[in-house]
Image (cartoon, rainbow over all chains, first blue to last red; front, top):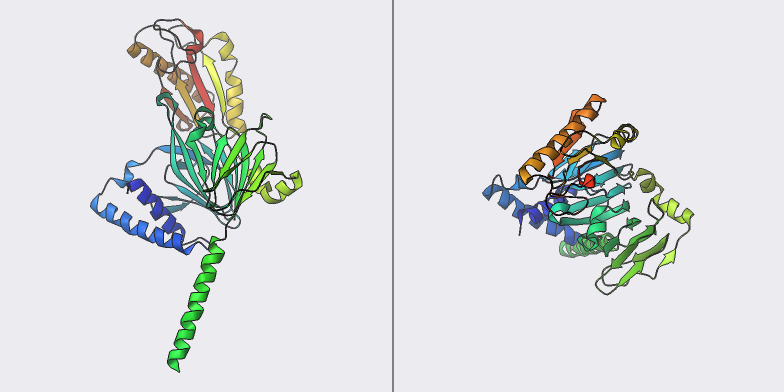
Length: 176
Length: 205
């Protein structure tokens, strides 16, 4: 298991502390395992966890309660805050947020929503392109960006029920 | 007696746990396609373990209940139905970043007369979007060697950064990068004078 996947699982775990909707029990157990493995890594491979710092985008607008979880730390989101691969964003019952990714993809989250940026790479000169996110719950709007134009197969959006493939477009998603 | 009470409690607990699991996992996903800002309609493929559905028309939607089921066949929703569910995320959606390209005279950091006229539009866009994220990316054509062109593209980016700062843009909002002759707009052989490649791209986010 890579440190990256491990951080993701750990992020999921820490988010449960203020998740205000019920989650699947199985998911919880997975997260707890993730956390344990991650603690193992953090203890035995110090300094390694900070390696994933590539920018994925930033927060453009915030309304109400919005949180960003990054490497097990959760902070309240404010406009212009940087987003990185591995981060997840959660909104409260009165929260919503607008995000801009480095490839020009724009995304908004409605109330009680949660998204995880699993993998983001935008380096067109070296043909390194990837946009993999998980839509965990809530409402979302999207306008896809340059990755969807240059390499549509590299854009993958996962919901608990389905996988979405996108060909350069605007669309809405609701996960409940 | 105490034992019977105990097992009753455990049964209740198991029942509640099952209920919790079921309620937590009874999820569904709805996807709605909309026209792009330029009016074009793209397409989204919704896939599960057993099959997939494409939505290809404006306001067309599909719903899927779990990975072991098929997405429903596409259905066009009314604008009212869409607004009832999605008005919040539609108003919150940021507009996409705006790209500007500024061209330069050969071998120099002087803007062409035409590109000088583009500067006010860039400043206006920065103000309108209240942007704190502006990318300035320098490029060159292939006249001269790689090292020379890398430096030239850096100087071009620096020149544009200076111009923006002079006009009141905070320098901390600007990120400069430069690609030398490596990332041409128009592909050419080496040592080709190509005005379209002597450029700085400014992205206002």
